[in-house]
Length: 196
Image 1 (spheres, rainbow, N blue to C red):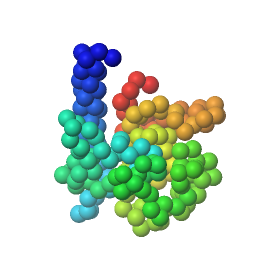
Image 2 (cartoon, one colour):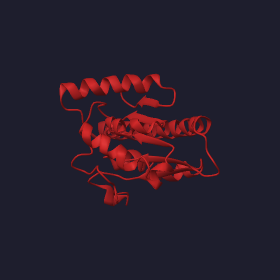
Image 3 (cartoon, one colour):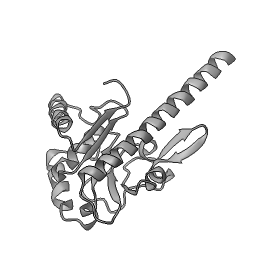
Image 4 (tube, one colour):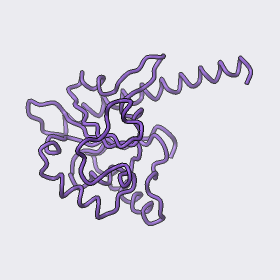
């Protein structure tokens, strides 16, 4: 790779990351305002739950060589993020899921219908879950199927293939149908960073 093309690549990479980070941050601002309007809140902060498999999408964003933590950005909007990461790299951000019931690194990316139902049954009266106002899913977006029974706002941002974790034709068709239901519900936010 020549020096000029490498510089061009580096510049494009920085611009792409800057656009993605800025876009995500703006989306968080908009989403936070929507949540404040649609969710009846007491004097407490808005609480968002995440079980993502990718730490960088929820935890860090490289922007002009500075690390901006989305969680810290959200603090100024009175948003608390419960980050129970299932990523193999969660130790780097100290966000590894602790005391998470039903889901884990082996079944979380593609939980069976029984596991999804069990997750709801285990958490529907859980004190921590009762505080949750919305769920956010980046990687995989299909993780939000687990959260649909809670009937709370879903924030779904496709950062990679939207069908990730849905390996069979039947699972993919079911996820497409659920995405249609999600898209029709004004309580849900559905966005894509890439063309899908």
